[in-house]
Length: 349
Image (cartoon, rainbow, N blue to C red; front, side, top):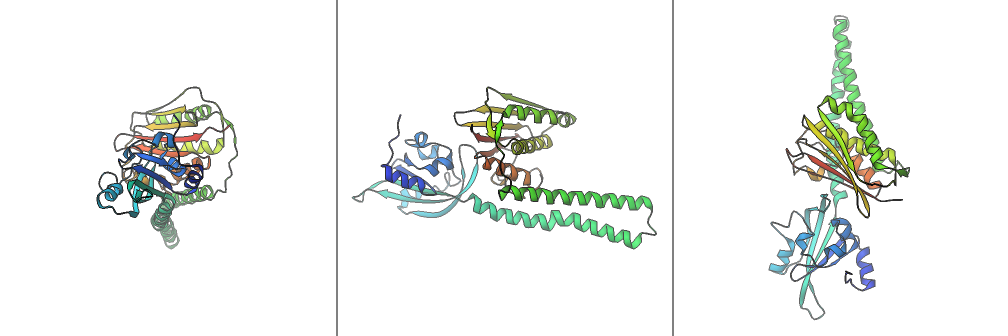
């Protein structure tokens, strides 16, 4: 059924305003839904219009301090309210919300307006700055201090030190150097991804074949940990993507699953298609991710407190690569119930 939209010019203006704009009637049913609202929520205007707003718009303000309820109760507009928005793809998006009552030409109340601004980049940069400072001050400084201390000890006590002791110190220095190099290389690679210095080399790629090849390469590693890896897919056509970059995406997700899965356990990779997308899900039975960690899991340099995992550079690169392809990546997880990472890629031919 066709959706009744605003007149063409007004609709064109609304779709080009760089924030999500949603209007609702007096009963909180959605009456208009611009392009940026579609992109933010994952729902089309056709799906959203006529639905109660709480079925489409889900933020951390909904349950306890809904800004629309404030407008209804006190007649006061609200601006600058920060919240966490969760869309239909389970992406956690920091937003800034503004609300107001809508009146007709004669001044009679007819509904509500909600403006939702995606501030994820702004918030991500703030967190990445703090995380990077922590990494420099702790994770990169620690191996450097250890190397310097051992080198000094060797120089001061070389003659009285046994060859075995020196070899032991040299081994620790080498391992610390490797650790430092790994962190630096990961950071440089992530920097190239986020500054778009790596250009996508698009070619027709059959994703099930790419995934199956990765599984074969990881079977031995998984078997050592008493894990099985399997894939499921129907009839999926080839799409134009950068196969090498996507290989890095799924290799990273698979490595994480193997690293954290409970033993014995199973990792499954499901591939399916919709009219517009190819959807790949990597599911494991690992320890899961705490709810308060989920909004930050793809931040650069973020360390999960719940499982003490890395510096987040791998997952940050995953998000950057998927975004370059015009896609989305999200995670659905809870403690002790495993994780499902979902990559959505547009069908490109």
